[in-house]
Image (tube, rainbow, N blue to C red; front, side):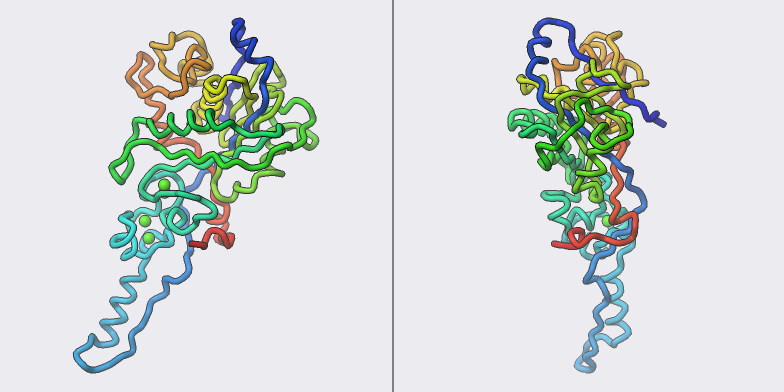
Amino acid sequence: MLTDISAGARRLANNWFCRLSTVRVGAVVLVTLLLAGVVFPVAGTSPQVNTASGGGADTPDVQQAQADSNATDTDGDGLSDSLERSVYGTDPTDADTDGDGYPDGMEVRCEQALPDADPLRTDIYVEVDSTQSTTLSDPVRTSIVETFENAPVSNPDGSTGIDIHLVTDDTKLSANGTVHSKSRAGAGNDIYDFRANHSEHRADGYYYVLLTDDVAYNGDDYFVGAGRPEIAAMERFDSPKVTASLFMHEFGHAMGLDAHQDGIDEERYSQTEYDSVMNYNGLYRQLSYSNGTDSVGRNEWQFVAENRTQPDIDCVENGTCPSRCTQN
Ligand SMILES: [Ca+2]
Ligand SMILES: [Ca+2]
Ligand SMILES: [Ca+2]
Ligand SMILES: [Ca+2]
């Protein structure tokens, strides 16, 4: 079991990075909640009874039995067994066929909550807020999206990769100067304040990232980013690659790549020995997590695909769904 501590990324001491650090822009908070054993009610699946008689038709009992069979939702994911088999290609005995935390029914029906979700491919949703006037730039987003797309993990539809959805949300949020990675008294002082007050998608199972001017980890604003399970904060830099790399690092923490694991937030391994953005020798130089073929041998992409910390979906957990969850 991973612990609840994730270290923040330090500033690089070398000159080129110091140049970059003069133009840092924001911070990021990621929110992840765990989803398990969900039941997702969906309208329109009640049995239909054909009351016609005679003429060689099935008897009402047979018709009723067939209607019941068609409407059965064995795994309680909001899609009938027959719809799963004949329309969506999902598993009628698995509520989350692709294992990404979002129930099959939610991925199919909740376009407003989960735009472009695919029930047969791993999706990750991130709400990105900012205390700055802008959010992640297009080049940064493209770098992050492509890195996840190229992830060496397989999906039920036969494809590889992960679709990460970076949902732009609030900008120009006010902060009391430094944003801390641990909860502090007073509004606007820590990343949890921002999630509590500004996350429009928390009920939908989104991670939360805050871009801000100054981040502190364990009270130390020497750090430029901090990630904890489900949530992260980070500053930004002129270089899209450096910003994207820091995002991948802090988001790795938010997904559960913990600082206590061998090589994470350390400089003991070269970039070749531990080929990951979680390695301080890889941070700012690469974007990808490790695939298990380096000396450290930990397949972080597999962990991300199969075992990452996941945000709760409150509307499912509480048994009542917001209206957006039942929209087609
Ligand atoms: Ca089902
Ligand atoms: Ca299913
Ligand atoms: Ca799913
Ligand atoms: Ca999916």
